[in-house]
Image 1 (cartoon, rainbow, N blue to C red):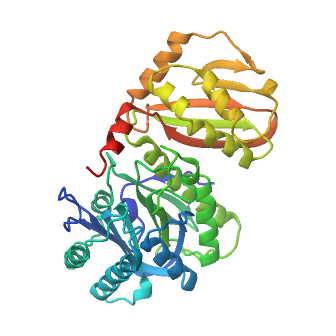
Image 2: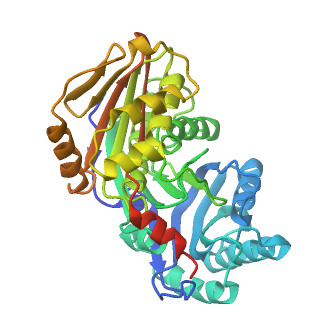
Image 3: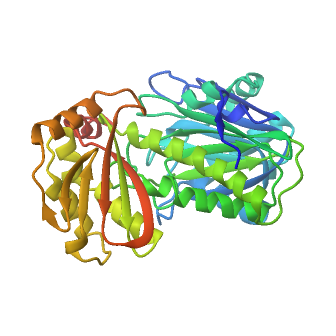
Length: 413
């Protein structure tokens, strides 16, 4: 398989895509709050959404859209108001925003998808949103990905963006992505918001299947605080502008495209986990020896999501008993005599028995990671084995600091 190459450009790295982001007055801060991703031609569209019974209007709108027609050309994203729990008027506002964009772009309504993020229970500031659309469309640019990435964030400290390239049929094929998310991250679908663009040609069913599998290997394996959102949305457009032959069935070309899609999703998912509210480091949990990958993933999620594990890491306390306890309550059966726990290069437990280890060195390892460089040297690696089975999985989270409580205690005040 060709090595994937990380390239600049985010969602506008693939051919035929433009993006924009502006301040439309939706956020009290005056920061950028309205974004647009646009394909210059019709694109195959796929999506994965929150499974919550309490959903924002934009989620239901996009689900209905994709069930009727798996195609789109534009994605309108607002930050500031979630437009969730806003009743029938919230639905009408969502449709109104999509119609206004469709008219501005001279597209049919069924070419527009929408997403929202912000405070639950607040309707869109629809007049301001609609007034901002002409400027938003006017700012569309082949280099507009970063502006769009900035316009979708809320409590995020940094934007999340990536693009990758591989070679199919002797031609470059690219996938780009942007995401937002910092709190209410414990997905049962995807993350808060994520948007993927691709210039390969791929059949609708195959693209949706690829996205679902990539989600399960990435966004469904991250956690910050155990809370899921009403607005979780992952949308992916593939417009075929690479001019490579269409991928319609499983096979080598499909596998290579899916590998790149998964890599993009995992990069964004880890960026979301690392930027957890109040976090100082990324936690990567790797579990081996399970009966299957699903079991390994479940154990990894339990460890990454443990408040006790997360708190210990924030305090630079190598309390491996919390890791063992989290694995034990994961719901996956294993013999504790097979349990092995490792922190970085330090083996802490093997064959279900504690080992003597250099506790100051382990504490220094945690402290160094919590002061490391974003997504490079700031990762706490936890390795766990629960047997000799073929199952392997990973999950990502972050430490739990005092600032998490402060941020969320004052979120709407």
